[in-house]
Length: 284
Image (cartoon, rainbow, N blue to C red; front, side):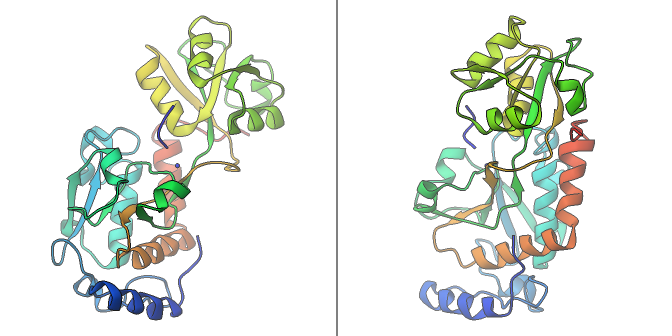
């Protein structure tokens, strides 16, 4: 329904990056032992605007990924991740320039007017033929969607879910997770059919991936709420930045993501924007 969704770099990355730059004609900084760009910083990175990092996102961009459609605010999960990434690469907040693009145009072959694009792009083999992906910055979890005032609205534990009738789409990760963690769910041909069952009160809640859950709650239900998410990311889509195919920035960007993953900064951002701020607790 929705079009969507780490390894510390070593100094050996520098040799690979330099080999790539020789082919592409663009300069790439060496990686430090921490996985970030070298001391030469942004000046050594060949970007579309010298000394700036141009990052594209959707038009509009939605919460919780970007708050109030203002990525420059740093509020929202993907906006916050981008500023953490930029800092790791040596860019000041004011050196991050935001652009807009459609989802489909971002994953087609060809030159781009931006350096990176972030809008919940799942890494797939087909897309990798046309564009580069960074290391993933998020792996989707499965989440509970229901309606305000429903039997499921106040349930935030796995034990509580066992008393509910939960709908899922057949053959999905959602089915696997619910069946393992809660018990046999009600199975439907598609997520849309499961949502319709929720609307007609045939089920108390629906389980789908977290990005899909936000979409259902905001766009398909008049009074929808996302009440919890499962801890496991097994089978989840991996979200990553899209870069033009063969970009000299792919390796330093991946190294920077790996660095904020290892430091725990990425987890802090994830916990804040995909749990606390949107009140979607992890089910226990």
